[in-house]
Length: 228
Ligand SMILES: *[C@@H]1O[C@H](CO)[C@@H](O)[C@H](O)[C@H]1NC(C)=O
Image 1 (cartoon, rainbow, N blue to C red):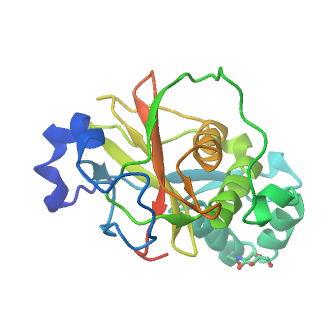
Image 2 (image 1 turned 60 degrees about the horizontal axis):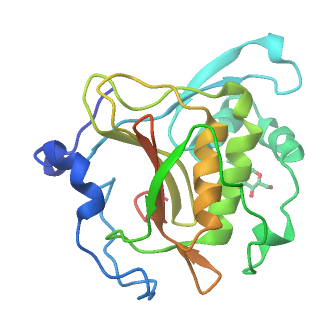
């Protein structure tokens, strides 16, 4: 299951200095000022698995495991169980104004969170993503939160998985532990939401950033055109 790009493999040892990669200054927007590499620089990439109920209205009907982003997982479920997506869509919370429009994000998640945020950076060598599309991914993740867990970390160190990608707007999570770690989709959604309400938003409509947690994992939102 583990696939580490050879380009990134040699950089694995540098994964802890990812935040120090020199890049354009956060004040310098320009949606195309970064590069758009595959994966998260300095990390390996692992696939994300989802244990999803075959019948969203009947959790006891059992689950199957599908891999990919949350959007790819939904597509796989729709192929296997026609109508699954319509049921899923009906369970999605309606997007708030904040989530639909390119407006100011008014509320904050608060000073304290658990898991505990350690730091965040907007200074990343990638292209900014559409904030609205990141919000779509957040809503998808929260709707599937019942099946949270799974993720990168084993057997290597410094692996990342892409949990959501639509319209070239991606949410990644990375594990800096050398053991497999389970992080809830809600926690990953919280990380993306934090970034959507942070200084990492540019011109009210684009976002690029990475937030780090004290228990050694992070969430990145970025533009990502790889199969997305
Ligand atoms: C699921 O339904 C939504 C809303 O109709 C649609 O935009 C999306 O493309 C569908 N996804 C799949 C995989 O069918």
